[in-house]
Image 1 (cartoon, rainbow over the protein chains, first blue to last red):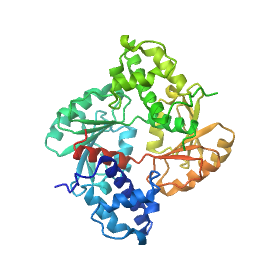
Image 2: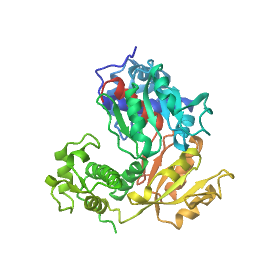
Image 3: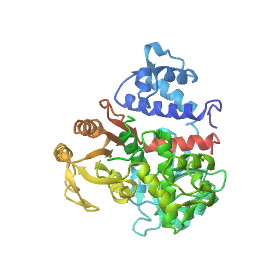
Image 4: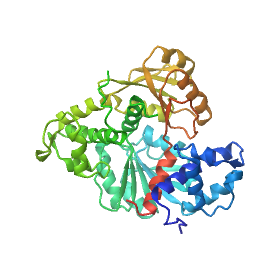
Length: 212
Length: 212
C-alpha cells in the first residue's frame, strides 16, 4: 500500500514531485550530488524551502555536503507513494493523445499507462508502446476489470462531457481534461483542466505585465 | 497598445482568463446570460470572488440579473490587453508540436501563431493551418524580423537548452517548455515548465490524498 505521508500537505507533495524531476535529470547526466540551490531552481523556491521539505523525508544525508541524488530520489518516491503504482488510461488517440502515450515517461513517476481508446477505425487495433488501442465501446468493460484511476481526456470537444461521465461512472477518480470543454462530474471525481490556449495566454499575460 | 490594467494582480488576470474561456463556451452554446455561480465553477472560486473580479472591469451590467455573456467577454478581452495581439512561435513540429499548432484556438485568446520550426526534412516545407514549417536554421532570421515574443518548445530533450538559448538571444520573452529538460535562461526571459508526467503525477497525488 501507499507509503504516502498523510501529514505532508499538497503544496509540499507537489514541490517534492518537482525536485524528483530535477534529480532524475541530474542522475541521467551522471551527477551523484545535488545541492539544495539546484533543487530550488525548480519553481523559484529558496534553498531553505528545499531543505525544509527534505527534512521531512526519511532521507538522512546532510544538506551541507549536497544531497546524494539516487538516495534522495528514492526517499521522495517513497514519500510520494510511488511504490503504489497509479494506473492510467488515455481516451482519444489523435495527434495529441498519441503524443502523450508515446512520449510521457509515466513509469518513471510511479504511473503505468494501461489502456488506450479511440473511435477511429484507422487507429483502433494499432499499438502504442505495446498497448493496443481499443474501441471506445469497450471502455466500460475494460475499466471494470482494471485498476485504472486516472484518465487523460483527449477526445474532440463535442464528445468530452459524454466520455468524461462514462469514465466517472466506470470508477475513474481523476480526469486530466485536455479538451476545451468544461466538465461537470459527480462529487468524488477530480478534474484538472489543461487547456493549452489558457497556458499560453497566462504566459503571455505574465510577459506583458513584466512578471518574469 | 495594450489596455492591460496594471493595477490588476496576476491571480486576478488568470481568473479573468478562466472566466473568458467559460464565457466563450456558453456563447458557443447560444447562451446570452451567464451567472456568477456558473463562472465560479472554473477553479472552485466562490460567486462572490467572481463578482469582485468583474466589479473591477469596465463592464457595467449587474450581477443580480446574470452577466450578458458577449459584453462581459468583451470587457475581459479589453482588460487582458487582447487588442494587443501576442505573437507566437512553435519550435519542434513532431506529434506534440504539430498537435498544438493544429488544435489550439490561439486567435480566440488574443494570440497569433506566426512561425513554426523543425529540422526534419519530411516536415520542413509542409504547412499547418497555412503556416509553413521553416528549417530550424532560419530561426534567428525569422525572429529578428517578427514580433514573436512567446515560443512553445516541443523539441527533443537533448536539443532543448540549445534551442531555448537561441530563442532568448533572438528576443523571445517567454518560453513554454514542453520538454523534460530544465532550462537555464538569462534574466528577463520567463520559462514555464509544462512537463506532462508532472501534471499527471500531481493529479494522481491529489486523488490518492483525497484532495478532490
